[in-house]
Image 1 (cartoon, helix red, strand yellow):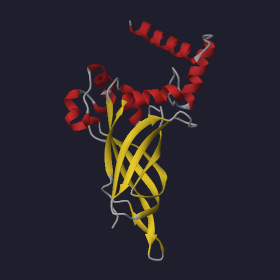
Image 2 (image 1 turned 90 degrees about the vertical axis):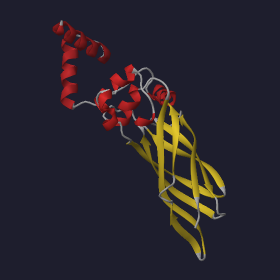
Image 3 (image 1 turned 45 degrees about the vertical axis):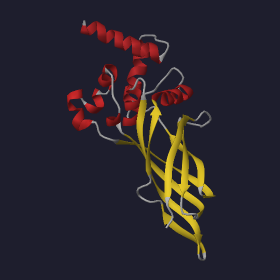
Length: 213
């Protein structure tokens, strides 16, 4: 029976993808000498928020996800960030491969809201691997599953995620809203002769402050 060990060597912002993407550099070791023809590799990437500390500003921004600090012993739990996959070419012994990690700025995604709230430090990640391994068999190919216990952790610097978002959304961000809301804001913009969405939203916020005062 073959035996595999997975390690994440690095996670970096991919500068040349069509959409926002991180890339994880993986090291895969097979220790029994089995010749691997290919691996159809799948991976679940989980964020483990309980494995780091948070300053006051971060804690405030995370209230919508986890509640106040007093509740964190119950609410600060690991959650799935993304699922990704790649094909590993044949090797014997040790190989390295890139794992694409498609990402999003969408604030409806819990992972994006969590990462946006962080200032500095690292994001504790867990990589849980699965998939199908093709090896040499007695009569052609043999097929086996990536063992269930093939997982590893990695401390991704928060700056890596911020760098990726700066590459794809330099100085900006976006929110997904209902068509009716877009139409209403567009009408407000036209009614007040505003020239940009930034100016429109700022005008709305200023109007709200005036009402509140």
